[in-house]
Image (cartoon, rainbow, N blue to C red; front, side, top):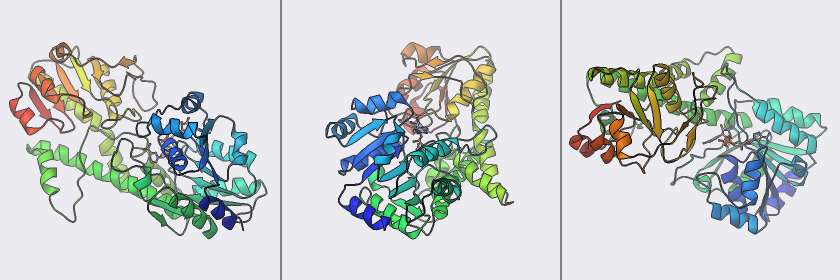
Length: 445
Ligand SMILES: NC(=O)c1ccc[n+]([C@@H]2O[C@H](COP(=O)([O-])OP(=O)(O)OC[C@H]3O[C@@H](n4cnc5c(N)ncnc54)[C@H](O)[C@@H]3O)[C@@H](O)[C@H]2O)c1
């Protein structure tokens, strides 16, 4: 039985772990296996990443270069673009991107490419696990037939499971080792082997009856988040209309110890997960004739938040007899969330686009992001790239409006409020004290 053989290898830490895709998900994962004593091979298409790893350097915020170097020096970690080495792996974990097409349908091309590489170099006795977020049915409808086509039988020739990744980049409290792992195999043997594997690197493994349940659980988690943020955003607009401070309302409601979970409004949603994942679920639902209305509504509210932020800035400038056209606008924070460098789907991109389309002179300061390009499919414009500007006193003073899009910790918001004339705060970055002493006009989401 290949399950017994694999479990033996795993328990003795003799199983070689292959990870396909060494990004925000794959790199922390592979390093965790190496730190726990496994030999691992990372497979990448980006040669820059493989050479960085080989040189002992990390390019992911939650992984230290010290740990990468340690794993490389001890001979536990190698990274390669040569997929023929997949044949040497006992376990293969797929961590490639799952973006959307322009039509907002799932783009399965990365999973299919990774699956094709595995199919090419597969040998009997391997456990294959998909970690990329995807619609229910991907593992058994898409991957399983590819491996069977090669002539291998499930349980006899290979094992196959889905285990969603829940890593939260930049979160110092929860990292790979202390985030419980959900595991669902396409067979019982697959579930058991995959659960045992993850038990080596995480404290808690929760098994479910199928890969589909595990796939659906991940999408539920992120859809839950997208919908609740959508509601927080709608509440922000509603509170603004009523002249009530949204943030004060959320903080008050959050004191209830049960039946309420705080979600916060913001300039829109970003990152590779929350804006995309609900579409994977609604797309699959549509195949079955089901229309997921909550998902559509949240998408509509969240995706128009950048327009709302621009509206707030426009009205505030207008009050000072200024137009957006010709105004100097400083965007503070462009990454999609606090204290990380990830620009994927960042709402700041849409805000910059909209302001530039209206004729504003837009620039930004973000201690984590040196450069912003506008060739993304999800921005409306294709303007010139922008480069991080030093946050000097003159820069703040000369700006007609400062829009706080992301509340990075290193930024001195007291100084911003001392020197600026108008600040639009979309993140509750300014404390009550800062606001109290501020000479600037402050507009809050
Ligand atoms: N970023 C997150 O916070 C997060 C959290 C949970 C789940 N996820 C999910 O995990 C998956 C990966 O996301 P990510 O953020 O790590 O993406 P990423 O873009 O940071 O990393 C993916 C890596 O895969 C590489 N790649 C692409 N095609 C490849 C191929 N055929 N072979 C080898 N490497 C290939 C890319 O070069 C890239 O380095 C996605 O499905 C995402 O939804 C991401």
